[in-house]
Length: 173
Image (cartoon, rainbow, N blue to C red; front, side, top):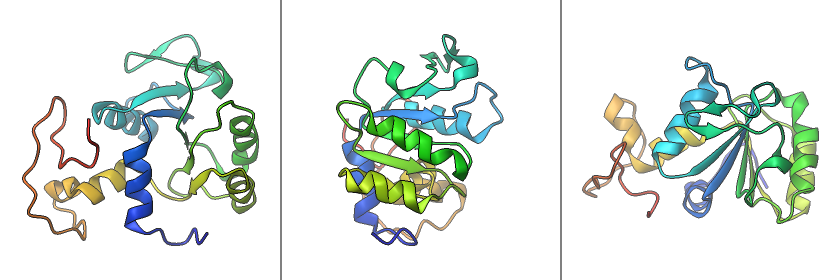
């Protein structure tokens, strides 16, 4: 797979199909990007499980934090990695030890590890690198345009009012 460019259908397919997301490197510090990505994904209706060994047993945004992926009590659909690129291989190995396997390994902005990605893909797991699910959700739904950013998406769809943030309906919940 070409990880330098992703089709919109690939990204939207992932965001529409996953329900549970483990965020490796989640932070309780409300000025960290991992904190507001966690908040955004929770507000969009995903079941989010923060992973942070230093914060395990405490809550982030009302969600119990776990030390490692294997500690999460439910199957994980997507592992979102908020760690440096050199930390990716052991996280992918940990994800590959899960049963069932996650559907997606997602690496945040500036995070890329081609060998780990190939290993995950060899096990049938979809991989996204150097992207943010919050940004991609906002871009594909047109929501990012509400802040004056050109989303590259033109739509005549009427926004759907739901609890939390307003949504153009990229997720059907």
